[in-house]
Image 1: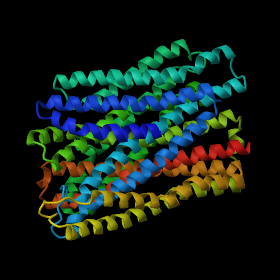
Image 2: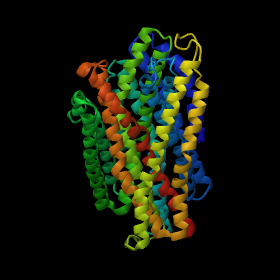
Image 3: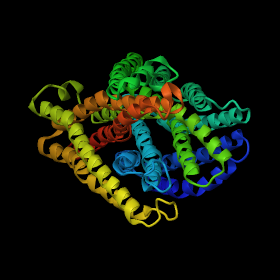
Image 4: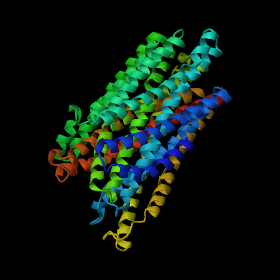
Length: 576
């Protein structure tokens, strides 16, 4: 993942000036160059971890996938959570600077917080999101491979059949990449024909269909003697429902999120309550969808069927990443064109591209949360399978299991409390530094000099990494210490507790934050009085809370449940 991060950090920024300049012509040409650029780099980023995983499995033992997953998760820990702190504090400082200091402009090149916000989007929302979702994908692949290994180890099925089944995950990795490429071609055709208003969502659904078709063909060749094709399709259906649910609940095009805008006319509290209500409702629906397709898979093919279903759910990861990178990259280019001296036609085209990318923001966050939870479930069950543990004996209630569950339930909230405290103090420090630069840098207000971005960025990075010390210790050392001291039962309880907290809170934070975000965008576009109204002021005030929810707390839970699970499994392997 360090190589992936290096590619994303070095290649993407160099392409931004070319993309801005390409938007001087027709709108479709600007959208096309941006989509081609982000998709090309997305294919490279998607392929690198898969290549290294395959090479590692060819050279080393099957259990190397545990180490591979550990490396992936700890990279994501600092990029996604640390980057989330960097981004959220920079964005809050940029938005609050006008209220904190007199005459400090927002979203202006004289305000260093504006540039810091764009850097934060790049670190957290692009590179961090890549590590987060690819981590879930690798977890699911690991679940399939460990299950196959356990079937071989305990000779549950004939060896010649297993040889065919062993290649099933690898063939589906290839078909997932191929489906995203075909989806890319479809989207390019849609853009060229100027039918680009909803091409990103159309590409996602096409990729899901192609993954299902490919799975049917592959299963006929390899896996049909062990597991039915049906669980994989159940997982794909679950992915469709979760993606549509995330879009339906949060987008202003549909009824559920409209009260967030309407209630903003009466203050900032009511839209927050409306969005929170949506978050809890979504939790219930998500639980029902997950339980339904996992139960159906279990009835068809047992525990193996559930693991295959989860692999089917994450099979569309490559297209989701491709879409998410485009969405956030369009935000960066649009804001940079506004801050720079780009021509007006280029600014207009890039803003239109940004609005197209915004149609899938909620899909990315909802999918990432669901994938993290389900992939954790997959690798846990496959590990229990490979260790040949008895489910009944592991779940017999005793003191150690209860203590583990209790610690698991409280650990995420403890980590979150430290992060929120750090976010508060970090935002205040940034506001003070922005105010200081306006007072002490000569002619900055007159736009005849530049803010000290390097100093502010260095200070923000230091504070973000410093704030990660306690959460990093809690996430990394608690599972190790408790596992070695109290044994396997407490480790299993710890995983269960973290799993249930993540299940209950993760999607709630994502949906609540996204709902407030889209309500703000809807009012900003001219509805309910527009950007200069008191309605916009109210929704903007409460969206600060939504930003912390969707860009810091939700990603933290995604990473935490995966990290605790893989570390606990590593401990159990050493105890066995």
